[in-house]
Length: 412
Ligand code: HAM
Image 1 (cartoon, rainbow, N blue to C red):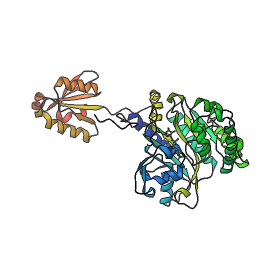
Image 2: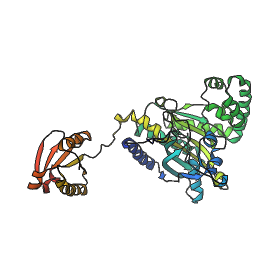
Image 3: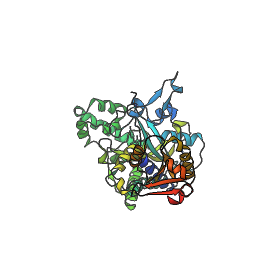
Image 4: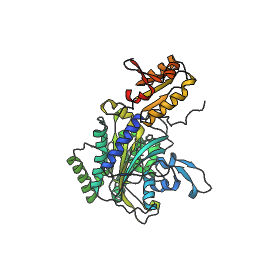
């Protein structure tokens, strides 16, 4: 047997996924977002430049196709933000801010576990080329109301942190490094390397001894300059005005290098270790794709697989539209197949949901009709053929009637 690739999924029932997507499309329209699509294949250097060489995603998790030289190397995209900025710049989009969302598969060679796959779908939102922190607040509000009002999720939290500007981070890094040196014996070898290469990543460590050691580590929010500090307070105040609950998490740094200022995650304990089902923040990209300046932007991505796990527990609260009732045509013998094909054609042209069972005896056909939840079966045997009739059986009540072939639609 050939199995699926490790860390990928076969999705055999898309009812809930389609509901989530339909609702999200409607929701994002209300907030004036437009849907776009960018390629799954991108130049590897796009992500190396944008996400940062030292990040886990770039250093360990990318699916890269070998090329003669690094310049030509291409890869399967691990995320959509860098691609969206590339598309914004490459297509000379002049809209400002540019509010877009996209949906599609991302690829990261991570260790698979519940809620973590090597191919996973993201719903990605970006508000490109805007400095206003009120956009950040409106953006978080849009996501929050989608989760709480549209999907009626309750057991989740919104975690916030503020990474400040470059100068703030420089000062914080120095303080953090001094602190980490003082707790050197309590931290793992990986964190010792992170301390030298990408110090903020230490907070992502799952090691208990490290986590304990970091409780008293200097916080980024204690090293903010006057203007960043004012922005941080302003964001929190605006979120409160909009009645959005949040918790401040000083260790939330996110796994990608392009973030500055606000970062956030929506997380739920119902998900286990991989508890973030949406993450994002403010960032600045542009020069990485050849622009003269960076575009100040805010964005986030929802992990659709993780969101599905949450909504699955909750779906009784949602008005998920039921499938159209199914009418199943049962020709008893090959001789009735043509009649069945013609009847199916007539009903389908009139927008009825119809299928025909061409194989099996009546007993098996009825069993199948029950199993797949047909509303009515339309039986055509020799007798019906001879008398130009169809026997219609209501699967719920068991009641049967015989009608003229021309009267079938009227009697459904
Ligand atoms: P991220 O935090 O790497 O951010 O991913 C966003 C979400 O994608 C996560 O919260 C999670 O739900 C889902 N996700 C990530 N990795 C996996 C995986 N291996 N399996 C299943 N789900 C996963 C970004 O990707 C940023 N580009 C978000 C962003 C947009 N920031 C600004 N704009």
